[in-house]
Length: 153
Image (cartoon, rainbow, N blue to C red; front, side, top):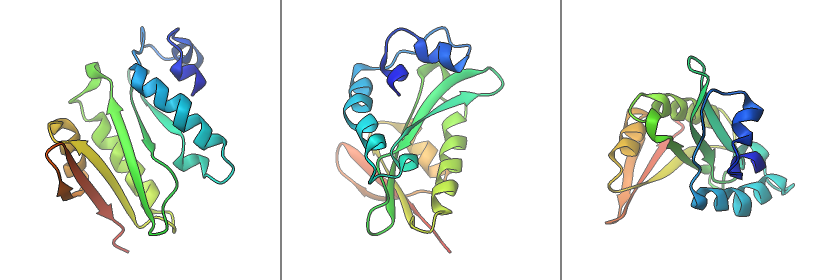
């Protein structure tokens, strides 16, 4: 994660991917430095629910996006996901596939009953990813839409 926050392409070199560069917005770098890395290092957290996952397309060997859980499941077995696709890889189905896999993985854990997500009300691409993965819209404000999928077992 430290390599990810640098602006020197060290992550690309370390992973051996074909991207020329990956532009990580400063706001995301700050989240990784100030929240994600400390959360992973906290012994009370499950690192699998605290870390940042990079998505690599195996055909092109390129980083196409990232996703994460936003912390351990809460006392109700709920966990939140967040994700983003690099602009040049949007609308190609990568995130739909990866979110589906992450949700299946999470719901296979006995302490996870529900996965939820928040999207910007104008982000139709993100809303489509969730709808295609059978999330249901549970609430909305003028700025955000809230989604969830529950374990049916």
